[in-house]
Amino acid sequence: MAHLSVTLCGLMMKNPTMLASGVLDETGRSMLEVAKAGAGALVTKSVGKEPRQGHGNPTIVELQCGLINAMGLPNPGMEIYAAEVKEAKKGGVPVIGSVFGGTEDEIAELAGLMSKAGADAVELNLSCPHAKGYGAELGSTPELVESICRKANKQVRIPLLAKLTPNTSSISSLAVAAEKGGADAVVAINTLKAMAISPEARMPILANKYGGLSGPAIKSIGVRCVYEIFESVKIPIVGVGGISSGRDALEYVMAGATAVQIGTAVWTEGLDVFNKTSREIMQFMEENGFESVKDMVGVAHPGRN
Ligand SMILES: Cc1cc2nc3c(=O)[nH]c(=O)nc-3n(C[C@H](O)[C@H](O)[C@H](O)COP(=O)(O)O)c2cc1C
Image (cartoon, rainbow, N blue to C red; front, side, top):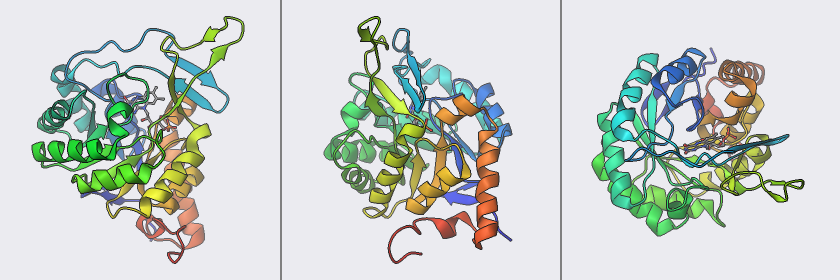
């Protein structure tokens, strides 16, 4: 009998879909709704040490092919957010706590705090393209990625995931660095640095000028990144970027992803996207003689199909 369950770094998931960081994960209650809607795991919004307001409005531009966001990592700070993690755990699916920080020590400390708050794993956001001094500004250098992962790893016993930026000439070098630093998995991709301009106003639409592009426009880039990373590392990969259907998820899985995250499509299509994606993956497996998702991981690579 075909089944959808997957194991990611020892975490059991009833299906390979996960909520991506930053969408409907502001509170424990909203994450519980996502769990109820069929997500196999939840990733929290990225949380820092101190409360942070984020950027001024407008923070989102809607395009035909996706979204550009420049939220600027708004969050209440780890001390307050710990309660939301505890609440989200009632959903009965793994909760992965996403953290960001301005220095290696701060990121490592936050990883430890996220673990104490009860998260089942920690995702290091090394890839936000629109927050000065954070995210991609730290995560674009392999040496820094390696040492951040090494420091964070010392603070936690739970699995450590490193979320990588595609805004680089070689995402696989970043993945290799994360693996060397002791990350248990990598997550690819965060958003691509982008902007939109209003011709009438003759100015950028986002108050922050630049933001991160997500949604259907970036799916093919995400799939390419996962494919390249799969050829460079042994640790599992979580695929994210533009997924809104079973076929999208299957592209990522066959490129090498063990599980997938969904962000923008939750916004554009609603919470049913998790069940729909799982249903469509299952239908494909039944029609094509696959018994488990694991059997499809990386099969698009030569010699594996
Ligand atoms: C509104 C919004 C907020 C986001 N906030 C975060 C965040 O706090 N941390 C993070 O690691 N990624 C964040 N992301 C990136 C997503 O987790 C994901 O990597 C990216 O959007 C690509 O997936 P998608 O096309 O399914 O949205 C955000 C994305 C959006 C659209």
